[in-house]
Image (cartoon, rainbow, N blue to C red; front, side):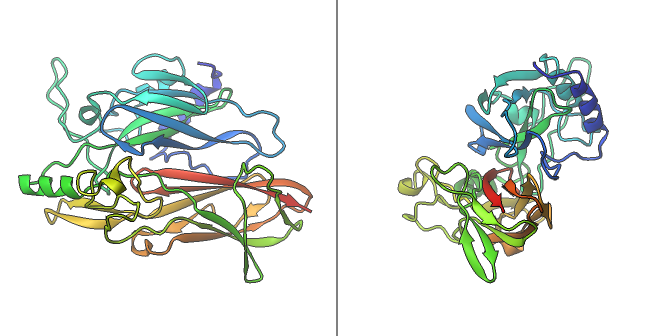
Length: 352
């Protein structure tokens, strides 16, 4: 690993926190930083996934460093509040087990362990010698289980934490409910911004995403307060074979034209969920959270988004006051769904 000793201090601080969140320290960026981590596919049962880091670099930065990566191969103790085993975090700095190094770069590949659903999911783990059998991991509020991974930039004080949603099925259901769930559930896909707009005097101006060859930065006046709007695709409430979206209840066998190769909707998807209280499989919609970052100026909100009850509204807005000095400025928007998916865009402005 290429990380300096101060990484250990960052790990200590991370472990002392109540419940750390994934990469959500929102503030004005003045140096390169990892803002988000993504897995593609967003949900998997086995095999290889592609991990990507959003390394945000302010306009005046002269370098874009490559992050180091590792997969965590140990479940955290049930008494720990954090999302990752403390031993994995501590081992990441030295590159030893139970942290499995994955190399360095903006993108890396990781092979999910064959026993991931036993380590981090609903399958009861094998007992350790001289110890009683452990218990399965509890699912999150959407029924999900997660394989954790870690990434950090060289010379930084702490890691960024990410996770791959594991397709482990459901537990505690009758056989008929398991069959119904398996026939209706579609693996999660990553959300993705579809458009980004500046709203000025009631008029919407489309802002191109970076990088876009030949696109000039959007101009704003120094100190100007503008409204920003990020939009994502509208997902269908009901499955319709032939709409190029693999929706809840469809599969490669029932609708090959939609579901061969994935084709998940990049907005608030519908998904099958096993209600443990009602003991029934029901349909739900994803909530979406938007994290906002800027290289300069001031954002009114660090986070916006839409709840599950607002899933039919496919945009979110925030206000940004441009810096009072001229020069380049950059905005990053990160869209997360509540099943572990993430997508992003960045946009450049010229302040005059």
